[in-house]
Structures are given as structure tokens and as C-alpha cells.
Length: 293
Image: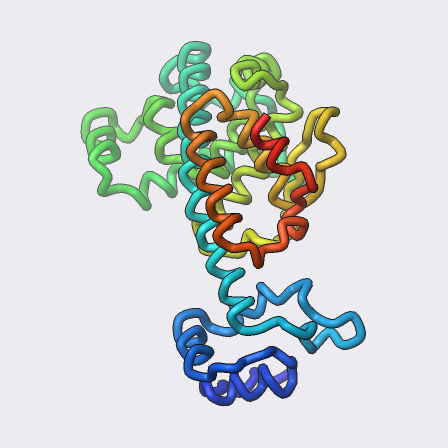
């Protein structure tokens, strides 16, 4: 096992960045100020794709610490505008799923595994059982919420589905949708003008992107584990980067104020930070037309 690296002072970090990584730093005080706000481990991730072909340890000429910091700022702004539009979709999905389940199976029908597909994970564990166990943990975790206190005191800890989904994480909601009966899935998907095959993949992509944003993780130039399935007219843009997810967000919110607000802000942020290489996020040359049309 290798020993951990020795911690370096800001001055030593700057020296190493210049000597070992060929990062251009003209103003050491400005560089220190940057490193004092954003530690280099986080900052260095924005250097992916900016290293020399013949030496992966060194930056290409002209890359400065300000370049990395500007990319970090771009990413921070990008996350801040993604969160509200994903939140709008998440709340909308909670509403539609809860309403359909309530009207089909009753207020507490979601407790009954017989109302869902008997799907299991790779280890053979029931997805419905695991989702319900996670729900119980969320109830304990959020025990001080007024709605939780009320339902514990008045209804013996039983929650109608329209309350339960408000305690679900986005990931739990995705799992619940994935095991809904085919006709139930279709009924929800139809409201987004799509089918369960596409909506399941959109759900997973949105959950991943939402979690990246919520935990301050990098979105810029980040390969995603979940690939959003696109329709034929957009399949050429399908990749494991951000842009396909934006097409999904557009499809799910294009008739609402949320999409217009997001798109206008996105255009502003891109204009503000020309240092960002949009191709690193899967943006094609005609990206603006695709998002506007």
C-alpha cells in the first residue's frame, strides 16, 4: 500500500504546478487566493482534456490556473441553473406517480407488493421490499417534519402515497416507477408524450445529474453512468455526457416556464465563460438550434 501524499503549502502547490505540470501562473498571490477558495484536488479535475498528448502530466501551452478556475466557476453556475429545472421535473413526477397509484390502488396501495411487478436486483432482493425499507429509514431520518409527526400520531405511522412520495428520494421514486405494472407505467409516461422504455432511462439520467448537482460534483466534462435514450431524430447526439440529458429536460418541460428560464440562463452562462469547451459535454455544433426549436 502506497503512503498518502505529503500535504503541501499553497506556495509549494504553486511551485509544483509550475515545475511539474507546466501550468502558467504569472500572479502567485492571485493563484494563492484561488487555491485558498478551491482546493487543487477539485480544481485539477477541470484540467482533464487540457494536458499534452506527449506528456499527460503537463498542461498544453497557454493553460493557466485562471483557466481552471474559470471552468470551475462555469461548472458551478451550470449546476445552479440545472437544479431548479430538475426540481420542477422531480416534483411533477412525484405528483403524477402518486395520483395514478392513489386512484388505481387506493391511498396505501403502494405498500402491497402485489400491485407491482415482482422485480429483483442482481442479488435476488425484491426491489419493492428494498424501496419500502428505504422509505422506513426516510421516515426515521425526517421524523421531525410536521407531516411525519402528524401521520405517526394520528395514523399510526401509515402514510398515503401522496405524502409518502414527498419523503422518497428521487432515486427511490425512480425505483418505484421501474416496478410499476406495465399499464401503470404507460399511463404516467403518456403524460410526457413518451413510453416506459424512454421514461425509465430519463428517470435514471435525471437522478444521476440531480445527485451530481446536489453534492457539488463536476458536471462539466463528466462522463455519466446513465445514458438517456433519445428518439430517432436525436439518436446521433446520444452519448454519456450532459447534452442528451438537456434534450430530455427540454422534452419534459418545453411547454412550461421552467424550460425558458433555464435556456435563457444557460445561454448567459455560456456567453459569460467562453473558456468552456462545449464539445466536452456532448454539445454538437447546432446545439443552440436544437435547444431552441
